[in-house]
Image (cartoon, rainbow, N blue to C red; front, side):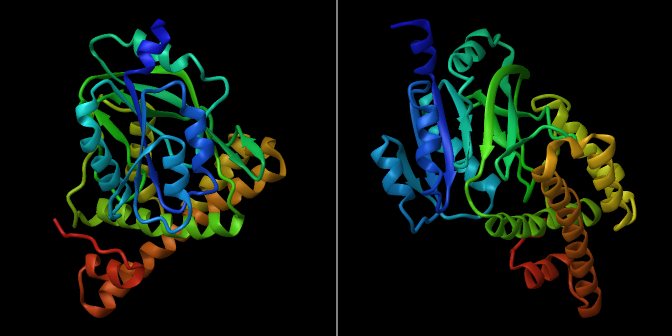
Length: 309
């Protein structure tokens, strides 16, 4: 057996799914031959997701959904006995065609003090790769030593945290969603509710929440979290959304992404951020008007149930 095959035998993929029949085969096929096992944690798909995954050799485990962090940590705990390394990839993502051999290189070069490996994540929108507007480079911790990492408990913008150090790699994961813009908008509406919960918690501390450590995750993630909670959140709503869009589109050259880029930066950098702010305002006002806690207002306005810490 070659060294590359031996390394692949120590890498285990975990994929979280819910009605991903349009994506799951492409995702699994991009990983096969480079890893030892693929496990799908499904939260109740009623399409052909499970059938397709099992036919392609993946193990499927059904587990009810609470939030992303809880679901991923369930998968992590389920696979801990396998040892080796865990690779997290979303169903609508693929290991880039330039990646073969990079998984082997990354894990074989990881020193004993390295528990996590950062990969480059690329986003495609309306058929175009989004390169500008502070989107690339995007370094994410997606590969880590089994038993040495967990997902921080948050409602949005969750990151895996490992015990030891992290290092960059040449691995590329591409997000190429095949669903419609209507689906994308509905999904981001749900994201906005979840992010509103996290940002309200940063202000009112009604939930126990993990904090990114000084090491053990992506430095880029730590920097973005700091800017969001210490600077962005303290800037007046409305002003911050417009300023953020202008920064992305003009200062960070988002206009170079063409027409698909304009729609992406406008929707994700202005519409979405404005929706988060509007939901925060709605929840706070509802809590004041009805004399209830922010957590209870969140349940009434979004449907999400949060356990007060």
